[in-house]
Amino acid sequence: MDNEKKHLNILLFSGDYDKCLAAFILANGAREKGMSVTIFCAFWGLLILRDPKKLNLRDKNTYERMFASFTPSEAEELPLSKMNMAGIGKSMLLNMMDEKDTPHLRDFLEGARKKDVHFCACKLSMEIMGFKPEELLPGIEVMDVYAYLDDAASAAIQLFV
Amino acid sequence: MDNEKKHLNILLFSGDYDKCLAAFILANGAREKGMSVTIFCAFWGLLILRDPKKLNLRDKNTYERMFASFTPSEAEELPLSKMNMAGIGKSMLLNMMDEKDTPHLRDFLEGARKKDVHFCACKLSMEIMGFKPEELLPGIEVMDVYAYLDDAASAAIQLFV
Amino acid sequence: MDNEKKHLNILLFSGDYDKCLAAFILANGAREKGMSVTIFCAFWGLLILRDPKKLNLRDKNTYERMFASFTPSEAEELPLSKMNMAGIGKSMLLNMMDEKDTPHLRDFLEGARKKDVHFCACKLSMEIMGFKPEELLPGIEVMDVYAYLDDAASAAIQLFV
Image (cartoon, rainbow over the protein chains, first blue to last red):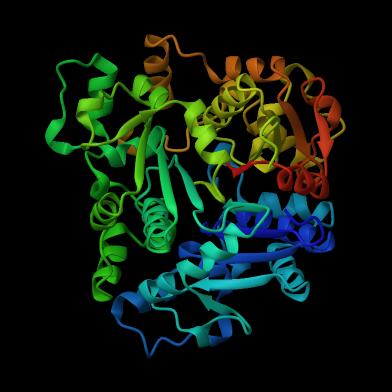
């Protein structure tokens, strides 16, 4: 492994607020250490890449339209992975974060994009879910599974989140 | 790392339709690139290896019988990890996949087995859940945790799914 | 990679009984093989490090107090990741484990600590959730994300559980 330029690869499958938070904290920390970072968003992870202002329902079929309308329209709207555990909800977590001045998911996402974390959207997931590249945040690369595997195999750390 | 024959190791813990789909898409893509692939199925991941025609309730104790009867009998029957998220259900996902001619989980599993993805069943999980080797699909190797660790440590990519 | 002293790094994000069980089985197996092991507990994974005898509600704010009171007070109290799947509950799993004389999560945790698995608590998660170092089991190191990345990048196997 090359000590000078280590790479972190995260396959972000989950669309949970808390898991995405963990992924972005890792990504931002890695960038601050000088590591390069790819976040490959697949399935529910695609939801963090949606630009709520660019939703286009006209070019979708019925299922795609339902899916696009009923899922969270941006990162900050994602649910927790353990919404119901012991009754703690997302608003409680956000309140705890606010008391510590911890940024929200939306801020971590913006930070990661400014820090040149390489965000990619899984090509097959986009086809299945009916998302068009122009509905995503600007500058997102669409990547297939072969390119993901190359990127992950070159990484010092690969995680499936 | 050896560039000529890279290895992908997936510890498939989850018994979710969508997560298994992701695992198989990665596995098939890796095989198409010439990588070798091991999928080590533990806990709920064992459910994808069941052969519905070989269920044998007689040699099981009460808990094993309940477990074997009430869990999905094959890969295609698995639930989604986010069944209730925004009301989207598995049938909706399957409809979206059908519109794009995307194969179902059962097809990806068959494809992976034909492509010589190495499927292993976790020994300890089988003991706890009361599954016998003869209840699994043909050709599945039973593997212990030590052998898993050797396989994973030799891989260019290891993922816990 | 150094064949003599391979390292396993697990980022334990989940607070699920079954996923923690998987993490500890891997960790103990790795130690028995002579590998070194770090388990970095973040978010819900922090819950396994709580010492139920050391809960201190006085130094917490309202949200921290609610959080500390309503979440599981130790590893053995954690819920299953698939509590409701096909109606199988945690007590059923524990019964199946008891019939095979499989140790419980509490025993695996104790075993891992005796085997010198290196347990670390994520600094940021502790701040957000309001856990103090003195509320944790003895000998737990508090670690930040940069140290985690160094540890993970040096590992032959890194997993996000």
